[in-house]
Amino acid sequence: MKRLASLAALAATMVSAPIGAQEAPPPATAPKLIVVISVDQFSADLLAEYRDHSTGGFARLLKGAVFPHAWQGHAATETCPGHSTILTGFRPEHTGIIANNWIDQRVARADKSVYCAEDETVPGSDSQNYTVSDKHLRVPTLGERMKAANADTRVVSVAGKDRAAVMMGGHKIDQLWWWDGKAAFVSYAGRATPPVVARANAATAALIAQAQPALDTPAWCAPHDKAVDLGGGTTVGTGHFERAAGDAKAFRVSPAFDAAIVALAAGLVQDMRLGQGKTTDIISIGASATDFVGHAYGTEGAEMCIQLSQLDTTLGRFFGVLDRTGVDYEVVLTADHGGNDLPEREVANGVAEAQRVDVALAPANVGKAIAAKLGIAGATLRGDIPSGDIWLDASLTLPQRSAVLTAAVAAYAAHPQVAAVFTAAQLRAAPEPSGPPENWTLLQRARASFDPERSGDLVVLLKPRVTAIPDTQHTYVATHGSAWDYDRRVPILFWRKGLAGFEHPGSVETVDIAPTLAAQIGLAIPKLDGKCLDLGAGQGAPCR
Image 1 (cartoon, rainbow, N blue to C red):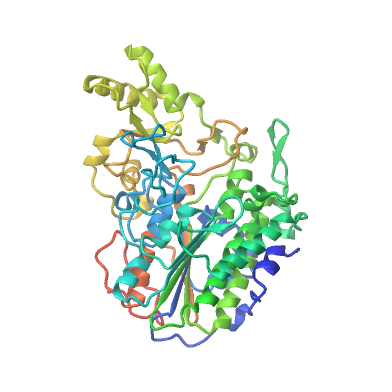
Image 2: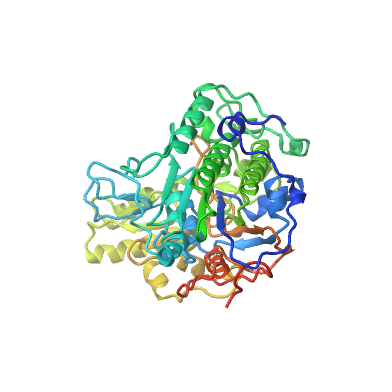
């Protein structure tokens, strides 16, 4: 298989270490470096589908503590809420991160949509052109708690998306870098750019300036290499990531993007000598390309197969870099959410219920119909997408609000693509979810991402396999964000030298990661939504 140029250009030191050479007696002390990797849109289904073909990083992780069917329990299975759970130990109802965007009609700007990782008070900004901020995250991350307990702790976060870097890194952080979507890894204004970041940016710019020939398809990807006609001259399923010189957009939707992200993380580990200080350090890495590939091509074509094969290689080389430092490190890999394939391929594969959402369900369209029925001038409903949170327009009088809410609930509930509609009053009155998340009702799933201050006046949940994108003429042709298991189930993989491998089929959540790591380094923390997982001997302090 062709190597991506980025592996050579950005990480010349990322040489592979033999996977079988990692056996050693389990250490009795806490790890000196914690490495938390989130693979955006890496569902439990994808792990199950491709795990037997892994030979690099995934192969190593699968020799550790494997939780193949963990859960993002909440209904709002989007990037920002999911990342907010991984290192806080709290579900979105407590992190305050209910979605990637929500409506706040109190903001002093025309655009009332608020991005989860922005400061909407910055003059001249909007939800598409914003200043990145951690202000909306209401709880501390594990890294923040570690630094509060010991100021010598270094906390680093690198990701392909700003929201992933912010939600895993938190409020107090030594280095925080994300891809700006165009040309470079950037951080908050006023932060100095370390030489390693400058080198990575120069190498990435040089890589983007070069054309990328088609990547070879592993033999085991051949069954996925089939075209799906989306109409309008568009097909997916047979892409091999050819890229014209200078095409930064195509670079982001390719394995090269993850290679660049991971290479920068490797450089920061080396330059900062993470794990070689007086206490445990932590670095979080948001590998974002799988999500972009899933959105652009779906989850079951040659594109995803090649992406995961290349990511397996990239992670293997990264672990080789960590091995060469001699640091006792622990890796946790998980995901912010799962994903669903594009409905056109699902229908061809016999999934009869797969379909695209009816555009009539868009809040603006439902709102217009309600306004006409009730004789109300102006807008009645606000929302960005035809599912999830929907808000009543702030201009409505109290009697109008009551009438519009009743009409909206009835209109959505009557539609054949809608599974459930809950009002804010219902969600506020519902108890916090407990017990195995696979058994949660739809109300409990919606409750897990309900925040009284930010959530909508009603929440609409679509039926299984209804894709919340009305047609294929958008940038994205497939997505996630539903309350169903294919979007909620993700893997959690722990690996550390000397950890006895095992596979646990039971019910765990991503909120269990933070308390588990805290126990391993002997860090006392308050009660979280998550619980400590027993990983066996050699993992520092046991669960208490």
